[in-house]
Image (cartoon, rainbow, N blue to C red; front, top):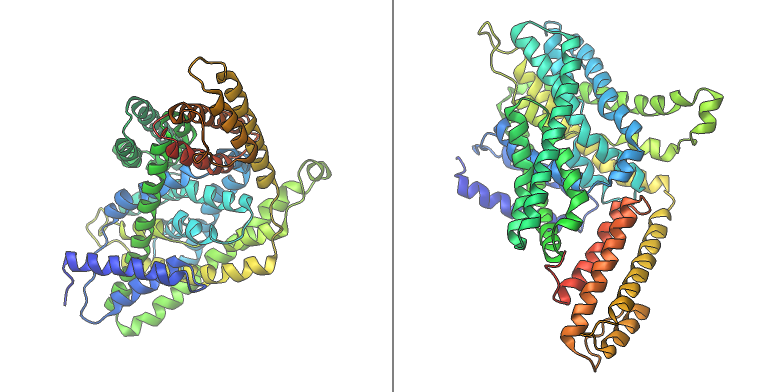
Amino acid sequence: MQFQPVVFAVVVAVLVVSLTALARRLPIPTPILQMLAGFAVGMIPGVTVPALDPNLVFFVFLPPILWSAAMFTSLREFKRNLDKIGTLAIGLVIVTAAIVAVVARHLFPDIPWAVAVALGAIVSPPDAVAATAIVSRLPVPRRVITVLEGESLVNDASALVLYRTAVAAAVTGMFSWGESIVRFFIDAGIGSLIGLLVAWLIVRALRLTKDPLAEALLTLAGPYVAWSAAESLHVSAVLACVAGGVYLQQSLSTAVGASSRLQSRVVWELVVFLVNALIFLLLGAQFGSLMGQVPHAEVRTVFIDGGIITAVAIVVRIIWVPFVTVLPRLSAEARRRTPKPNWKSLTLVSWTSMRGVVSLATALALPLTIASGEPFPHRTEIILITMCVIVLTLLVQGLSLSSIVRALHFVPEEAHHAEERLARREATRRGAEALEDLSHEPWVDQRDVEALRTELGERLRTNDQEGGSFAGRRRLRIAMIGAERRMLIRLRDEDAISDEVLRSLEQELDLESVRAGGGDVV
């Protein structure tokens, strides 16, 4: 029996809805349920799951995930933790790939070094989808989430450069470390510039249109345009999406109106939800399908090798994170300059390293043959081992994260609430100033002014109050909201509040603006 595309799509849709509802009632992260469901579908006798094309994964799934993750990452917190993110996204990727390559040489004595390094590059980067989908649901300090999200945004670029270099060496027999290092910086720099250019053009286009649907579609097109442009120049498409998403997020508050921002948020949440669900369902289905093709005598060997590689990847991270944190503090002067690391945060960062779609896509993208026409060495084993690493890290680490977070008893963060109180106070003050400035305009009804003064004091709606002109009051309220939002942007730009606080309060103002009839006002 083979699923027709329409039937398979219906089955996937039913699974997505059902598993999402089920996950709300069970202490199991939704991605794990989705992966297990896909695995069950792939293992049904006689069922043929559609093959997962690596190009489809790279182009359809990855760009919106990276772009949206960058859009919802605080640039301020990212810059503050750039050193930690760099040691994980570049240093740890290289170290993990090297150690996995050594272990692979022991597991498969005939495997070429270049192929072993390719395997290491495939399994080295933790996945942005898995990290965000699981960790963001837990009561984890914002700084830890920022480090994990930042690592997942950048490590794909370093892993893909290493992967392509190793695969090229395996196919052609030529390899140069110097060329690889230079290539990484060139790819990263040009890719980032492409992403910034695409996002800049989108912002210019957003300022010219007043249609919320068209504006939402423009933001959705951004990641695909950036990815395609970077791929055509053979530079880092990953960093193109990351840079573009960050730039767009910083500019969206002044580029479009409230209704457009609200609609864009809903559209992006829906797209990311569907993409995440499809990825984990297809991931589980592919694993189940591949395992069904392996002879029973070899299944045990595949699981053992996959378990060994998984353990190596996990242990390397557990050692690396505290090592690179403690090493810079060996001198007394360094200890005075840098705060003492929080062992709870180190523990969580060390343990959170689920693999996902990038590892799967790069494994499936391995060429079938090398330059001599012979089959690519150990291609099937690499794909199956990669699937084992993905499944085991999702199950072992994903299922244990909730218990670990509860056991660590993180202290609730107060900085976020303090920033939010500051933002509310300053935005309300600026709104009051705008009201006073506008109260002397000839078109203003003073009863409207008094009503809005009362609203400022109590932050309550005044729609049911009598007196004044509704149109005039609405015009006043829209102007006040605009002044409050501009103050929030100014506080964000001055690093007084985070992007997260801006988004939270801006959404409240946007909702008020839409209710007041000013949804198209920037």
